[in-house]
Length: 394
Image (cartoon, rainbow, N blue to C red; front, side):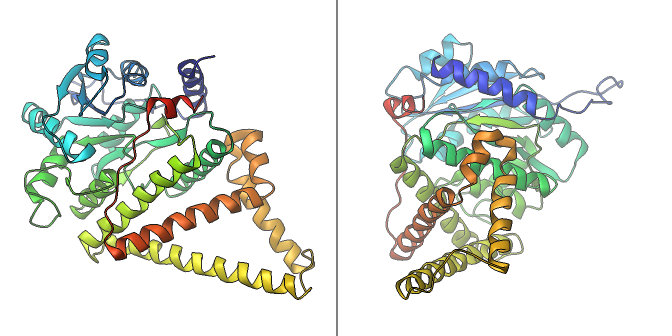
């Protein structure tokens, strides 16, 4: 089975597992005009993944009005493949600002053609949306006038051995966390998010005077993680950000530990830089508190490991007993229960605890490196998977 066939099969299974979009009781009312929905797909050398991404957009239960692929500094046939599959193509002109710059160039052309009531879907070229994604997002934005954008809930594609399985467990826990927070999303994922066009215009107007970045740009060209930054921008303007379970996205995972290191280093460094750019506000305070708690947790884990080593050296360390046996059991049950959506494979991976604990230590090392780089002002780099690395996921 090819990678594409595996992804389509996994997407079909994911679709069955997710809730269907609620019925739209207003759709048949006189004078009711649904908003236009335009998909914007930034793509850098994505000729292999693009056909599946476009197919998932065409397979939505609510038809998209336009699908526009932004071919950014491509050295392959991304633009030709996009046109061959019926998408419009915008090719960037000397873009040096990564994904944010590519999106800004395309939005400069698109926004004047749209009204404030229309919707814009920004979706990655390496992601596939469940068929009800757009319908769920449209109905949520229609019924919740406090929401400025609806983000996807991402699920990792199959493959990549142990490192892939650990990422899928991590994503399953994140999806569960969002659901338990009544769909409130702390980050509008870059894999797929639907924005109100009026909100994007408001963001562009406020840049340089209330929001970081040059006036007139929707995305801050200096942001290393544009999805995290646009979330802070939308929330700073008073809008809510949500991610309903029905907005499922099947996305690319990192096939090697090295790729994962680079990805998570960029994510964490970007988060820290964005918080520094916004400063302490009522919006950023919870994010800063989580960052502080995370780094304090890293210190606590380091102390725990040091104490464990000292007790073991002194011959005082034995198997857990009494109350500590109960505490250990609670931890094991929590780890297994929170990935039950992944089935027996995910639960079996979580059961020993030591494997996922090692994964946590890996991520903590990334967080420490990101903080050190931020303090030293070290230049951050963008890591993009090559076609051969992408094939390693199969």
